[in-house]
Image (cartoon, rainbow, N blue to C red; front, side, top):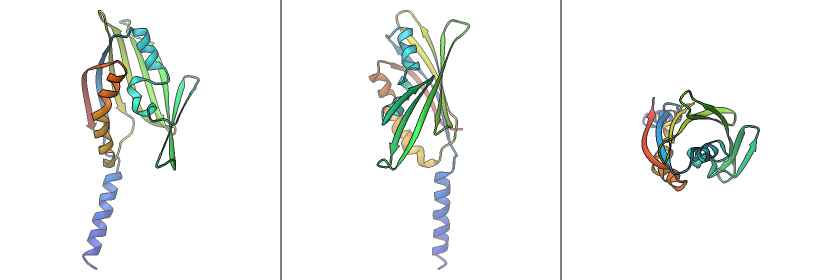
Length: 172
């Protein structure tokens, strides 16, 4: 009996630590494309922003209404689902660049913010994206982050963007 009790305590602690919200993701990415700035702005403000390919790519349904796009995503063989909503705001900076902010909520709870600054260079359009999670995650999300890191740049390349630089952090 004495060896069973410590095992139960250790197992309970492992479950708590795995689920405890300890880490947060944030970072920057610099993209470049041959598209003109108008096409890039349209893609970032449209229903399928390039930086959210993993969200809209697996959505069962995409609804667009009054400045917001909602992706309905089901998982666990359809037993559970979430609504990922993206609200977009666009402004022109003092230097003439376009700044687009994507505020993301999941089931009406803050999830993340992406801010893209778009400017044209000689024959290309450059996009600087800053992102930060609005919530913390448990350690059980680390495998998901590792897979996302592996395929994130490939998803952008498939949409016509070249990843110049990425500075991703997982912590805080």
